[in-house]
Amino acid sequence: MFRLQQNLEAEFDQDERKVIVRWTDNTDQEIGTYVERREGTTGNYVQIGNTVADQNVFMDSTFNTETTYYYRARHLTVEGFYTPYSNEDDAYVPALPPARPSSLQIYSVQGSATQFTLIWNDNSTDEEGFRIQRKTGVNGNYQFYNEVSPKAGTGIYATTVTIDDPNIEYFFRVSAYRGTLVSDFSNEVSSRGRTGTIELRIPTNSITPNSAVLLWEDIYDNEFVYLVERKRLSFPIDDDFIVVETLGGSVGTGATIQHNETGLSPNTQYVYRVRALLNTQEYSEYSNEVLITTPFN
Image 1 (spheres, rainbow, N blue to C red):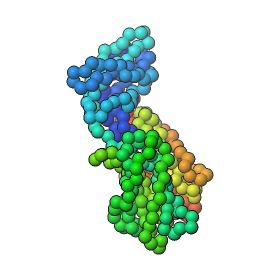
Image 2: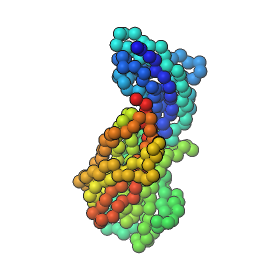
Image 3: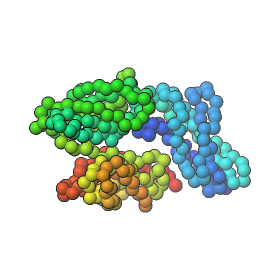
């Protein structure tokens, strides 16, 4: 029996910077699903893409900001006809700040006890500049340090910073801005070589009813292993995080570490975090925590 999709939902994802369209797949007789969109309440629906059979997530990145879009979808069946349309749902795309700088690193300048080079990934093409903040000591408060000009396109960006006293530890972080819109801060680094925290991410399009892909950049050159921890937030709720995987480290820094998480339950919330066991026999700080909700089957 051919059934239309139900429970179609559209939501703008600030981290992915995409509109995520999901629906419940009620048939195994489709070739694929075709997604349509209209701009505002008076626009006309236009097909913007399709998914293969049994894939119930579509990601839209071809939008204008400060605009509301409406979405609907329908199956193309194995017999060559389309099902009726699903319900429609809308998503508002706000004005977006530049993409957050990532993978901030710090290196001492040879021959100087007070100068350091900051290097980060510029992930934005529309920033007007970068703002660097500095704090003195672990318990200090971040203050504005300097502003540097933008670069064309994306890629590696580097600048030099100076500290006042080499006997004191200083911390740095970076944001990108355009007008009054400011990105989230990068990870932080310190003048004593601390490379900040692990930046964990789980791409939305990797999340299925039973699996997800965890990604992070290797920022340590002295790790033994990485430990992946998970906590279930849907009934039955876990009391605390549990280690679900231990992965060997990589040589040097900069490699992308990947963990393929399987055995998840549909329509369930989980939160993940990662930390490293270093060759100093100490644990690193935890990464950021990432919350996911697995879709229905």
